[in-house]
Structures are given as C-alpha cells and as structure tokens.
Length: 485
Image (cartoon, rainbow, N blue to C red; front, side, top):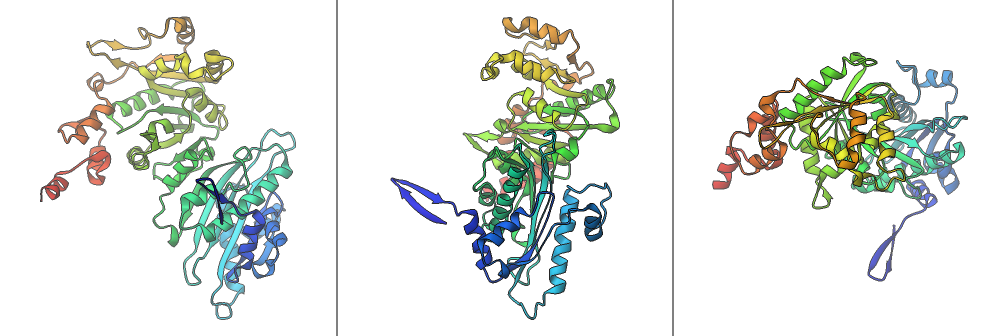
C-alpha cells in the first residue's frame, strides 16, 4: 500500500481491486478454487481480468441448478441453499478436491485455498433485497491447518447487477485481506469495504477460526462491525458465540430488555422472569416460539468517548452465563430497535423496562431529528403489535412509582394517557419488593471499592464468575495478598 503525505497528514492510497487481484495472482504459491452460487461469478472475474490467473485459479464453478448443487454438496436438512451450513460444505468440498488432485510432492510450497459464496440477490418485485454467505478456507503455510473467515452480508442496493458487482469487490477484498492482513483482524474488517460504501451492503456476522486466529475473540470482532458502522446490531447466543440475528429472530415473538447490565443484578432477572410470564400469556404469543433478548446499546459501552471492549466482554459473558441471548446495537431510541426486529418478525413483541427508561421515551429531545418529532417516533414504536411491561421504581422516601403515578413532561401527559389506557403500557405487579433497592451502579461501586455484601445482589453464579475472572476491577483476596507481597 502506497503512502502519500498531505501537509502533516499521512494518507493511505488504497490498492485498486485490480491491484489486489494481481498481487494474489503473482504470488506463485497461492493456489485455489472459486465456487460462487446465486450472483454470477463476480469474484473470480476480478482475478481473470487482472492477468496471471493461471498461476492462481485451479477451478472456477457455479452450480446454479439446485439438483446439480445437491449432487455436488449434498442436501441440507432444511432444504435451503443460502445458509452458513451450505457455505461450509462448499468450502470443505472444494479444498478436499484440491488436496486430492494436486500432489504435495510436486508442489511442496503451494498454499491452498477455496473461496465460496452462496447468495440471493434482489427479487423482481424488489421486496427482498437479498443476502448471502461469503467465506474463504486457506493456508498460510503449506503444512499448516486451514484457517476460515466466514461472513454474512445483506445487500442494500436496488439493482441485481449492482449487487453482483458489489459482491465481486467484497470477495476480492476478503481474499486479499485473508493473505495480507490476517495479522491485523480489526484492520482486515475495515478493508472489506475498500471501494465500497456502507449504503451498498451490510456485514452483520463474521467469524474467524484456525491456527492464525487462535487469539481472535469473535465477539470483539462483531463489536467492531457495530463500532465501524458496518451493521446496526450483532447477536451472541448463550454459548457466547456469534449468531445471525435473522436466524434467531425470524417470525418469533420477541421480548426485549434493555439495560447496561454492568453487572446484571437480581432486579434485571426479576424483571425478565415476571415480564416473560406475562408476555407468554398474551394473545398471539406462542411460548414455544418466543425469543428473549437482552440488549445493550453501543452508547452504554463507551468510556471517555471510546468503546471499552473489555467492559463489553464482561457484560456479555455474564448474561450468556445465565443462558441469555445478547444483542449489541447502535440504537439509542427504542423505536429504532423495534423497527430492527420488525425486519425479521411481524409477531407480537414486548419491551420490559424500568420507570426511568419509560420517562426517557416520552422526552422530546430524543426525536428532534425527526420531521414528525415524537409523534413520528411513537407511530413507529407503537404501530407495531407491541406492549411495554413496566417494572416499578423504589423512591428515596420508600414510595413506589409505577404507570399510575409516573410523571412525564406536562406536554406529554395526554399522549402518555393515550398509550397507557389503550393497554400499551402494563405494570409488572408480581415484582419482588425485597430487591427494589438494588442498582447496578451501587454494585459496581462496591466491587471497585472492595466492599462486602455485593454478592447477594446478583443472580446465582454471577458473583463467582466476577471473582474468578476479576471482572469490573474485582480484586479477590488472592490478588490482594499478591499486592501486599
């Protein structure tokens, strides 16, 4: 990459797509195959056009016909073709063929790779813009195990031809980054958008695996997607691994709890349990088709203006340890969160929140950027089949604030009454009064000051994990003894 100087600024000249493809082609050891389904053979075309492709390309194919595809890669259990499972089968199959057909004795220095994508571009009615899975399986040393980089994308353009071209550029960026930027995964992510705009596509899931990525935390890589504006939200399953939001949320009844969860407390879990019990009794809610999501907005992950990545890991780890699914989003306003979920499900949804959060929803300052102001936001929020489950707040004088005596700005009074008395805001009556005085900020301060008693404020197992991993600045007796020594 060339560097130029402009005044006191250093500006990087990004290699063109042709330059990237040519550099790969001119590397005498990089050798592999391309398998692309659903949007032409746009990635391999870049390598053919760059020149010197005979050194690099073992084979290029596109099994468009479903019967041919099934005959080559097998039949998926769900009979779908644009899936991660299908992509992995394609990558493994093509690498197997290379190893079977190319002699290591004759080519001891070759670095094998297989690149694949399986995508669906925009439909004729332009109702569904399309999405796809893209990946590479490759070596960096001839005798090394394979590394994988697999991502999911969503197209934003409204023309199939443009989507195909976008896919070809992304694929070339991925191959180039895999071989030349593998030691800087965070930069590799940003380079995926070289010669692309975020209005062209969204990358909402990425996973790295293999020997060169042993120290890569895929959760942190997902956080980078949100941080860099590549996607609005990423999701983690209870096992802590990245998961595609569409796969988890598709056609589900969704109950969401937003919070800082720093750390998760008994109040958070009581709010979840009580609101869940109310939600599954609602009409049009199927308990077997309900997904609970604990959501943290990116603004809650900032410390002194920057993302505190360790802090993020700590919160996500604790929530996942409780068997919860976690969403990290860029949505400051609730209506944007509801709009996001509405992409995947038209079923009834619920929001569980505390009094302060509901008061914030009725604060006009959050909607000044909308031409229709708060009315536009509320139209987007409550137009959907949605209910708010309100958890009460214990006041300093010992009284309780709930939906009946909650105070909003005088201009918002009638609007609040409208939603309240139309059944959109419902109190959680069966809360545990003994834990209402628990606040995350209090627990966090007690942990940092090494005070006793905070453990009892947290769900079972959380305190032990905080101590074991020294989360949130927790210092165990063992650590304190080492300091004294």
